[in-house]
Figure 1 (cartoon, rainbow, N blue to C red):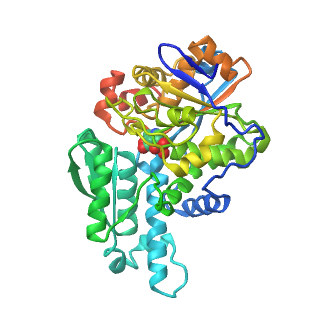
Figure 2 (cartoon, rainbow, N blue to C red; figure 1 turned 90 degrees about the vertical axis):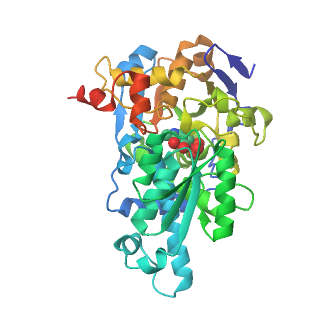
Length: 406
Ligand SMILES: Cc1ncc(COP(=O)(O)O)c(C=O)c1O
């Protein structure tokens, strides 16, 4: 049977998974990924994020090894998302200014220095966001000196709004959910001559979300360079529209070829659009009836660009019940059995939550081969991007958790 359920999650083994283990760039490309890795690596504030071994958790879960890619410190923005939106803003400004003049190619250092400030300040970018993507776009706009307007739907917390406003973005609050905020951003952009910098694609709108996803491949490349001689057997990535999962999947398939790890995508059961797409065999939309605690994974529709990689790149789709991510946050914060305590936000802990749920279910761990030989990689895609929510769910503040690291 392809679908199996326990009381916490559902698992669907993808019948379209690429058994040849070939390259899987889909609508992305090796050249685009390499260019992003080179460019972002040059940014003055770039630093690789830690890949943390968690042998204590591995032993508890009955697997050989566990690594956690900790994105909480990425560019001081709290999540991997800072790689995508900001890179797309850079590419947009570079190409817009490049088209206007025959000068040498404009670099990120040129833009950051404000040398072209008079021209870039006339360019405006905008987007709708659940939090992290908007923060990245706002940061990129401030870094490279253009105007930025961010649309937030009514469920985005005040803490996340403040974090975006801190980068000088103008904030527009919209009624309804995420989809309404996307429509409003698109309409305002059209009317005002702004450019939408979205992390999801739609027919006819691909250049910018492709740049965003190429930016995310930086995170995958950092892991590959650390694990090249001892690759994981399983990789779990949490998904909203699927952009980061596709970026990791494509870079890993490229680097590891036929010996690439088994690839598992995890989503909230309340917003499981990729799981549904896997079952339907094409991009599927789901209604979000109730918002998930994993706020940044709340997407009802996959990005078609992401789907072009994931439709064959994913070995299994998993859904997550609502209690799993908070439990995973608390387990990571405890840091038992010699593991360091880790601060992971609600969406950031979802990959580890999926591993916990699969390991607890005999059937799921058997189907996925999560046995005593498995070496698993999970992505901690965010830290405590809203400290109040974090403290409420974990029972301790991020600072208290980090103090225990000593
Ligand atoms: C912390 C975090 N993790 C994972 C995701 C999922 O990324 P994607 O929407 O590209 O699937 C997001 C999206 O905003 C996020 O903010």
